[in-house]
Image (cartoon, rainbow over the protein chains, first blue to last red):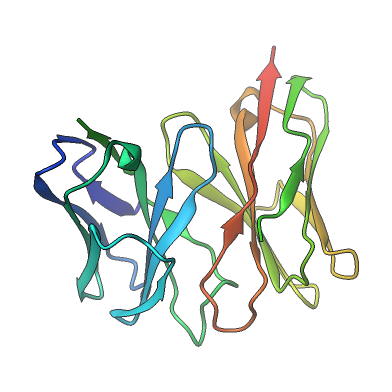
Length: 117
Length: 112
C-alpha cells in the first residue's frame, strides 16, 4: 500500500467527456506532482504544486487542468482528451521547500490508468 | 535534458551483482533512484546530493561523481524481489527546484 492515494484506479472516457482524477496524501507534504507515463517509458512531469500554488507547468495542453484545493489534495481535470492521452497518470508528493525540492524523496501513488476511446 | 541510463536491460541469477549507470550532459544537483515493478508505483530507493550527502535504503548503495555528472546504483547479492525497472531522475536546475527528469529506465530481471 502506498501513502499517496489515487482515484479512480482505472478510467475509460470518450473524447467529449469531462472527468477528474484525484490524489490525496496525509504525510504533511507541501509539494505535489502530476506525471504522465506511457507503457515502457519513464514518468514525464506535467505539473508541480508547491504550497498549493502552481510551481511548474511543463507546457501541458489546456485540456489538462490541475487544481490543488488544499495541502492534502490534488486534482487533475480532464476535458476533450485525445487518444494519445491514454496513459498511466501518477501523482506524487514530497516535502516542500525550503526543506524540500529535488533533494527530497518523491512518494508516488499507484496511478490512474486512463483510456480514451 | 534526459539522462542516459545503461544498460537498458539485464538478467541476473539470484545472488549475482549488478551496476546500473546514469549519466547527464548537464551539471547535476541531485540524482534520484526509483524502482518500478510492473503495474505498480515507482518506489524511492536513493537520493544522492551534490556535496556528498546520501539518503536512502541501507541495503542499496550508489555513487555520484559530480565532475563526470554520473551516478551508479549497485545491487549486490540480488534477490528475486529486485526485479523491476530502475529509473534515475536528475535535477539540473538547483536549489528549490522540484523538477526531475527521468532516464529511460533499466529493466532488471532476477531469475532463480
